[in-house]
Amino acid sequence: MSGVLGTDGDAHRPSDVLNALKRLGFGAVVSVPDGWLGKILVRIEHERTMRLVRATHEEEALAIACGLRLGGVRTALLVQNAGVLSMGAGMVSLAQRYQFPLLMLVSYRGTPDDAVFYHLPKGRATEPVFRGLGLSYACVDRHRPIGPQVEHAATFAEEASCPFALLLSREDIRW
Amino acid sequence: MVSVAATRPTRADYYRVLADNLPPQALVVTALGNASYLWAKLHEAPENFYFEDAMGLALPLSLGLAIAQPSRPVIVVEGDGGLLMHMGALVTVGAVNPANLTVLIIQNGVHAASGGQVLTNAALDLAQLARASGVALCENIDKPEALGDRLRGRAARNGAECLVLATEPDLETVRPPPTFDPLQSKHRLQSAIGAPRYVHTVFGGGKLA
Image (cartoon, rainbow over all chains, first blue to last red; front, side, top):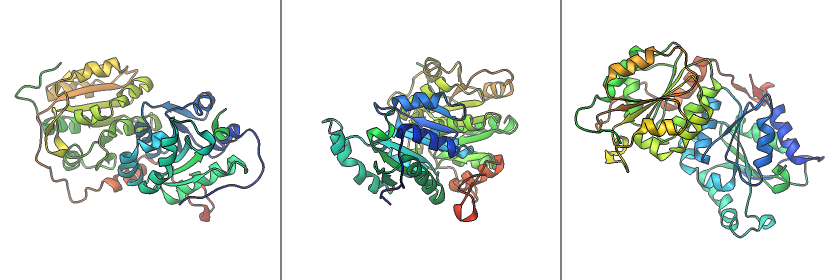
């Protein structure tokens, strides 16, 4: 499943992402940072209602998130698309096989709007690999407010009992 | 380096001690292969979570479970091969350092679940590795009674514990009971601990309750 999620209105989009996570009752975020995610993670770290776990590798982060959800904590993964490319086995054999509903907020590097030469190979591979993994995802519509799109992605993950990846652009997530 | 020489206890020897000394309300996560099959055979319980594959991810999943359930002891049985595959998880355990997490490493020097291929380095001092990763309480163990002593002496702990169990390889696949069902173990554990469930939006939910 892929597509564009959202409705209308706008503000500081990273703030709206954080507020959506709080409003939806996310108790934990597991992350391996990149250049876009670094500052929002510091914000999350200072939230009273959320626990940030900094992992060393994205597949490890995925498993930590599964354990948190197993224990009853609504959990989001914040990683770069490179990290999703490197978590394939855990995605299919753990997160999807055991039907863990996880919201994945993924910085989408290597798109035409982020044409950094060393990110482009990841950008080209991202959506084909997601489809190959059977990973449900959507690309954020930057012309619509981000909060409802995060909520729709989180709801999809829960309703379908599976991970759902929301691919984010720089202005969505870089504080 | 540690000795991986001849006579070592079996996985079953350690598991019997573990079953006899499980702390109250403990949750037990077991890695793929005989780590899960044998534990299911010896101590099938709703508080168990069995891996059927996803090698190396039992430890990080257990870390998440320990964070989510801080009032329950969480015990994970990981293999030395699985640990080497995701060694970074040990660093994250050391950083978070949850006092309710006990990491048991079966050090048998081989990838037992895939046929017994020798590890890249079978004789690493894994307790020292765990200590260097920030896990304060670490010990190499080669006698089941020593595991029992550690499990009984749980009183005042202020961080995670890692016990490395020198173990004879077990290459013959153990037959778990017919009720063995790794996927079901997820739902069963969640019911056992009273974890909140998602209520579907058509039933007025849209959240965990």
